[in-house]
Amino acid sequence: MINLCVLYGLTILQEIKTNGYDTGYFKQGDNSLIEEAICILLKKLRPQAIPLIESACQIPDEILTTSIGNSYGDIYETAFEWAKTSRYNTPNGNVPPGWKEYMSPIINSKAKL
Image 1 (cartoon, helix red, strand yellow):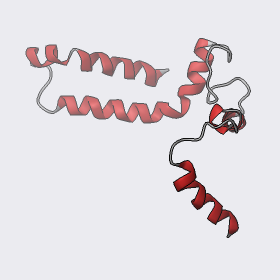
Image 2 (cartoon, helix red, strand yellow):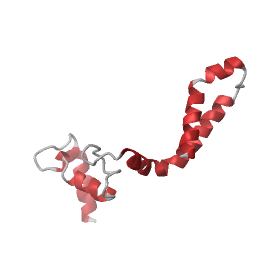
Image 3 (cartoon, helix red, strand yellow):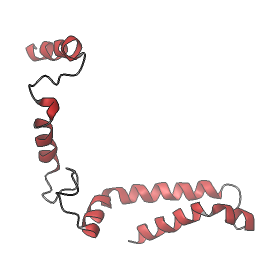
Image 4 (cartoon, helix red, strand yellow):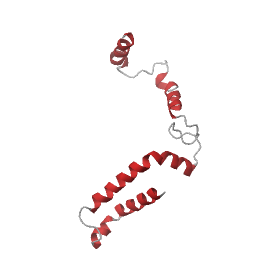
């Protein structure tokens, strides 16, 4: 939570930085320091972002249709199931242009190796 509060404060500073320059509070180069601090905080918060949003918002899986933040925790299984049942993986002719000419020979040659 501390990192989130600091990030919020830095984004506010970034939004009103013109006032800081006008009053003399900010000097040349301070903007790059703010941006660097924001990048550092975002890197720290990235691994915690999904659990934080899940616990804060309590959005049901039916509304938030993503395999990353589902309540089951089976990220890869859900993504794999969605790929298997995708309309692009059905044999009803939804083959992208160039697939048979360019991709199919490559895949078939690797299968024979």
